[in-house]
Length: 294
Image (cartoon, helix red, strand yellow):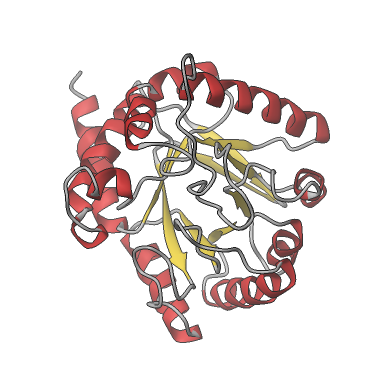
């Protein structure tokens, strides 16, 4: 897809390794949790972690994104010490099996982030945008890892999805304006602290109504243009903005996911965080083929 005018190549420095990406990146999800909204409880043992990580790599995943705590609506985060132990165990297991893999970890706390990187992780993926742990930005800077900065303005530690704190904004609230201002402020702070690779994530499904999710989706290309030096990650795989609109369930949301992935790619998304790696890779190939004839 390197000929797609919507896609901009980018690189990530992970420790002493430099990764150059000339086509859209697939981030495969490994939820080592009992209660994730889609595949909770499916990957709870060493052999299951390995089997799923290897399968996603073989299907075309560029990054394995490991999480041990659910952030679904109604979830409560684990204490950092407990999360750190569990996350380090999963990362170590996957790293032994896939020594060359690029691994990201889904955590809101600096202690698990440090434990995971010490165990072999490469990227920190924080759905709180640094809001849950004031030491997160400093820790990421010290670890010299890329950082995924997500828009999630209403999240709380006991409500990471931002559902309980959800309020109906009045008057002139604009989710895109809020997102742009937030990204600008936090991105500048991270840069000042020495974090050189900051990936931005619009946070679909977090602190947003269904209409706001689709408003952001329709304006992804503008977000890409406003932050040309920050790779754009889109994470909407099987989320409620799809299955609630279609009056179905996460199990029956793959078709809607593919449709939105295609739209995101055309808008310039550079990374897709997904449950279904093979289907996503096929979508990338088809959109890339179309772009060659434009």
